[in-house]
Length: 116
Length: 279
Image (cartoon, rainbow over all chains, first blue to last red; front, side, top):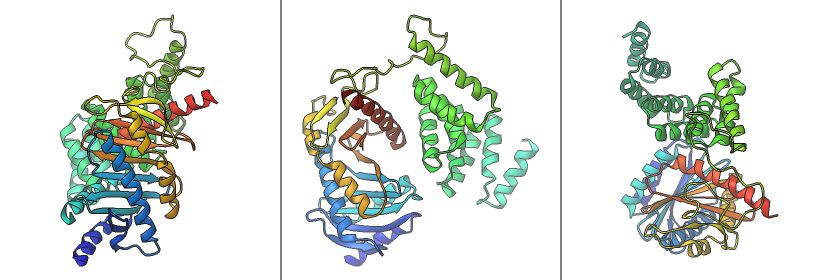
């Protein structure tokens, strides 16, 4: 299963601008699988992104808007994107400014569907 | 088919990666062959999705067809890819003018105008926006015939708690300003069923700006600008108008994210003005 997860993440890293990808446990924010995360503090990114996604999930659901399918935090130097994969996993991608967010979103949703 | 279009079509057929799709698409657009122009532009963008000129071309094509919403989105993408793109500033400036947002129109048109001082049409448009702004400042005078409806001018004095987003779409049901402790400051938020959910959502968002900052700082990504969330019932955008506040904008799920970002920037500017009026 771990190899399957890694292969899914590696398809994300082929998108231009993507620096790395993570599969994170939504329950505790721990890394389940990762790809191309050289030089990136994967555990810390996983924990922070999972916490942020959890907060947004709670906020959005409490407003009656349903469960979010995609999160996108954009910054000066790049992007952190996340897509829930079922109740247990979160697909997380770190990318620089070159990334095409629309393409990234489509691929993340596809992978979230496949690993859920 | 004109000779230049024939030549460029042959070039593109011989080398599908060629950037000749840009002049070819423009030539087709100018001849009114919008379907063909759009196919060329979309095919080019599939190879060069980060090319601002490609999005500018597509915006002009769909704009000619009257699809101003997509044109707005494409020019928005172009400006994200290249914040100094003159064609995108010019195009989106005209759209803001048509929509009655004169301040935004002026900003974009003047940015384009600085780069194109000899563009008479553009300079004329800038002058018209100035005239419209002057007319709006004197409400007793007649508005020029044919001019689009304009929004209420921003209040010069601090206003009541409902007023930060006055005149903006969703001011009472889809725009919410809160402090970092999750307390509502102004605006409102309704669920898709029409229930007031401002307080409960705001409470969940306490500290969200700090968490966003920590995440991007950890990765050395600099300052964060926005957090976009897609959900079945809405597309939402969170921005921080200043260090002490957070703005939530909620719109229908089908709204393109580029437009969502534009609207949130406008709302954040209104929020900043309102907050400054309080201090």
